[in-house]
Length: 182
Ligand SMILES: CC(C)(COP(=O)(O)OP(=O)(O)OC[C@H]1O[C@@H](n2cnc3c(N)ncnc32)[C@H](O)[C@@H]1OP(=O)(O)O)[C@@H](O)C(=O)NCCC(=O)NCCS
Image (cartoon, rainbow, N blue to C red; front, side):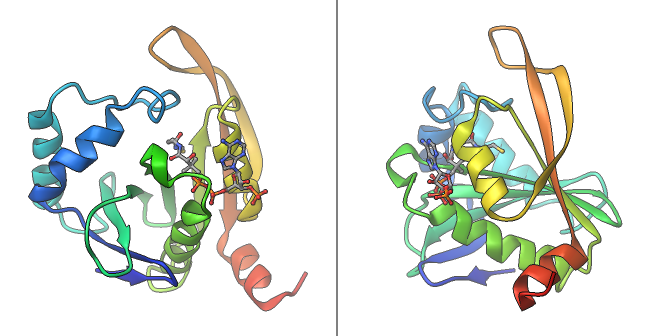
């Protein structure tokens, strides 16, 4: 499966993406608010290989899209879909530090939400975010997701327990935004 936007191409992660994926996923400035902090390149290679063995959309599974420039070269980030149940998808996104604050995340997430609510026909999408992660909170709010929950000390950030907010959106809300309806 492939998603193409004005500047980006989202497609399957390949084993040869491992070094670039490892470089930004292991970067402490990038993974500060994330649960997965790979220690070795082998770990990342296994992560990519494992994904390729699971059918897209399998309940309980994650599928990570590669985010590339539109010409399909290189890797600037990744976007994950977690198929929580037949109605619900969780999203997560990570960009290499040098690629942040250029609007790429909004562009990629819009394409992913179109896929989730359009082709995949899901009812609800959500993302879990540490409220200190201002860039991600702004990103989610900008896409129209609203905060539904705050789990106090709901995850471990490496140093200790930290809060976790849930931002969510329904299919009909996404469609209403697309058509400009209330
Ligand atoms: C969260 C992340 C994906 C956002 O990516 P991005 O490409 O920088 O986001 P965009 O450029 O599309 O900007 C989205 C919004 O965030 C704001 N933003 C971006 N970087 C910001 C920063 N460092 N501080 C404050 N706001 C920021 C933008 O101004 C924009 O808000 P606006 O629409 O109100 O103008 C990126 O910062 C990242 O990869 N962080 C590390 C991984 C991570 O924490 N992922 C989130 C886990 S759910």
